[in-house]
Length: 100
Image (cartoon, one colour):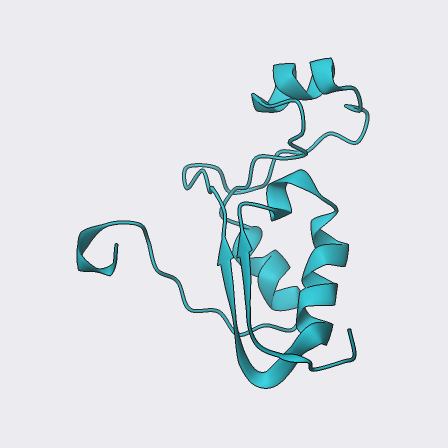
């Protein structure tokens, strides 16, 4: 798609399964300036840093490390920095209360 093609992009539980740096860059490129990217992902708030291990490659190893055969990482609180470093401004909403 051409640059700045979309007013809104929804990315629901995808980033933990793919190269998130590339995916965030692509979302940013395709999103119209002033548009909204809704990015949903699991975060382990008690962890300051994301756990990922580049040597883990097979589905069996991924299941052992991440609990799913196709997952690449467990996000810690630093996910916010990853999102901002892709160029986004960040607002956060948790899945609780009236917003759910």
